[in-house]
Image (cartoon, rainbow, N blue to C red; front, side, top):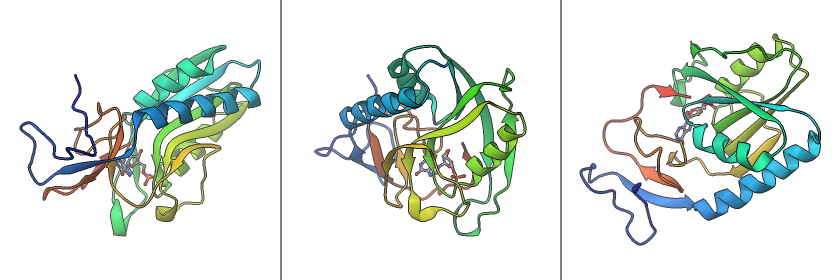
Length: 200
Ligand code: IMP
């Protein structure tokens, strides 16, 4: 069983740092309902077309899996992995590709699936990259959007939840590779280690 954070017992256990506490921000139930509605919206826009989902590793994996199941119809998926550097106050916008797509997106209806839109610099890099590859359509679905953190001029076509400027984990999102398996999206009060590099 995955560790489940509850409002009643926000402390992380066992064996995890005492100073890290979790608070449920969006329950799995709410996520499930919202993902279902997002899928309906996407299918309304692409009623009879194969939709090619492009997940941004690793945070989007659980969202993509649920979205793919709710979409119905013809769906394929692929994954890309990038690392963003210089996060925080002095964000440089430097993005490094770790793993490219396996197949061409030319002529396809592509839906980029991201866990969270923060500064928007990662998405800006990805959209520029994908546009050059001449997809038929290029749309973006994000589960979470921290609107007030935006630096790049990008926005998603389909957004799950707009959230405040808090560091969140769970449902695919990590802190130092931990907490991805939490079913809920939780606010984590970070320990002393800090975050210097984020793999999108
Ligand atoms: P952006 O380029 O600043 O929009 O960053 C996007 C990436 O940063 C996401 O795909 C996440 O991997 C990571 N990120 C941003 N905010 C959070 C957060 O609150 N929790 C976990 N990861 C985050």
